[in-house]
Image 1 (cartoon, rainbow, N blue to C red):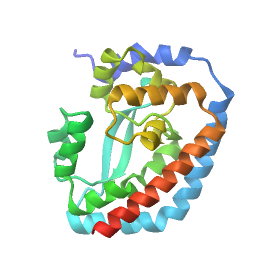
Image 2: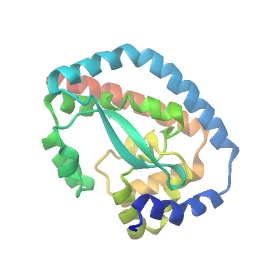
Image 3: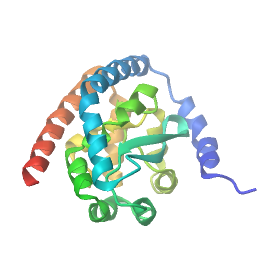
Length: 223
């Protein structure tokens, strides 16, 4: 019987992540995640419904993109987003990572999807992932299992991302952007893991909020 990638990842990294020191801050951040996800979910529900209808009207179903990602401790979860790409784009984009993935993703975007991605409004459904405990508001960005396996081999410290929940945003995103190299992103992720705190969490969320508003305005004016 073939060994599933999920089994390999969990067996290889679950114990390493579990052996990392437990910190009270993780419980406190989880409480904040739950409270903020519930609050933002209620506030953004009308906008989310409108966007869902627009996606259905302009590019059909499915409305949501469901992608498998590696979560805390090496466990897999289904990450949700509004669908922004053409049909079967995931299969065509599968082999790519980094800047090449960014470039090809732009070419695969639907007209509405390009705006959703530029404004980051496509990530509204991930509030459900945060509420469920799959993700946090702040942390390393979720990654596909295949790429996690590759990067964990290339970058020995990469497994340490599994100590915390993946995030809607992170230090790498607010500091350098999405086209930063994986090694640079990892350095920012490891800084978050080492220094995570409520003040850093709130500062990162605030900077992300300003960034999202600015990107949404730029995306709107380009249409």
